[in-house]
Image (cartoon, rainbow, N blue to C red; front, top):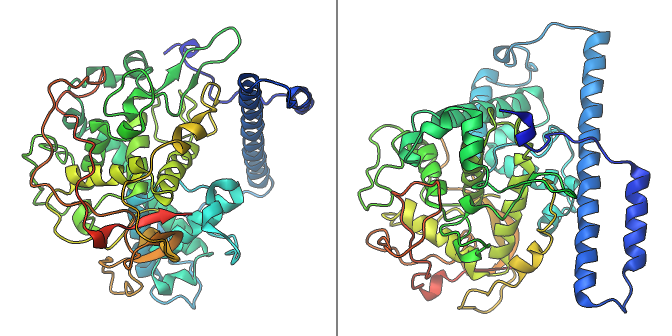
Length: 492
């Protein structure tokens, strides 16, 4: 594919002095006498510059790390250890290192399926736990993102493994598990599962074919005289059940392709068969959802599937943090989407509460148990997207509001601490506090809806998104009736 068709994946950092001058110029223009529309424009420009500076800083930090690694390898070359040697080189005080390594690797696979496709930082295993960390501030800084993900990881690790967290045995095995699951997932989506997710597989054969067919579908914004091309975070038709040329919270993260992607991840290559026709057949084989006892949808998995769906349609050839062709920062994009969903649940926004209910209706229509786990837990240019806070903040709240409570809401479900050296997987997770909720049952992420007898029916009048599978139908967005005991509301 000609490189001119795609936005640059690693633009050169702008001059710090120029960025400072631009900021000072904007600040001087922001006076109380300015009309509201001018102030909004200035705020967008200010945010755009700040995003560019943050992106430049991240790029420079990564480059410094790369140079340091190159320098170290040049100065003192040493024999590389193969993955299988970690247990052999483990400290003598570690009992059954091979068993611990394999169990930890399995936790990495589980973590990737339900929580995140990438670690927020390579040092997440070695940093100290900040006892003063406030989960409500998780997305406010890179440091807090690390602390938030560290707590997620700790809730997946068995108790006897947690004390070894900072060792190469554990960090290496966990990341190996993530890498192995990420590789098998990406190969499956563009291989055996593809024909079950989309109608026409022909455009997916080449990078250029995907770009020509789906660039606009995944948010590509062509460059202009004053702006480089970029990929939008929210003006992405693929994110919505129905796209009518503008963002719609009630349709966000509901595209049938996203749900089919998740079904393929947890139920195998044919997992999406019958998902929207009422003829869903559960595989007899030992699938991911059976291994990890997945009985309901969770925010981390929704975001993972969204990222995977974007990547599936992108020109990128490898599933890596930053797309090799698009330049999309998938790791940062994941944080952005996850923050929006978690904040929506914390603020009892109807779109977020309904989102999880919608996913449960489609993917787990026969689940007869109350939820015992609640879920998980980019800077691309944001020009023309800086009003996203207003877009999410102005969303209506869920209709029924019980009395407030000081009970902490769980941020994610974790494997049971009883999961020790017998190698058994968890069946009853324990919650990690994130937000306060109103309920006597703090293990739920959102109000549990009444289960419909079958998936909602197709609406013939719905407008489908160009380029997506026609086998998926739009579904009613109205939240099902709820019982009084299940109305768990998130608050800050």
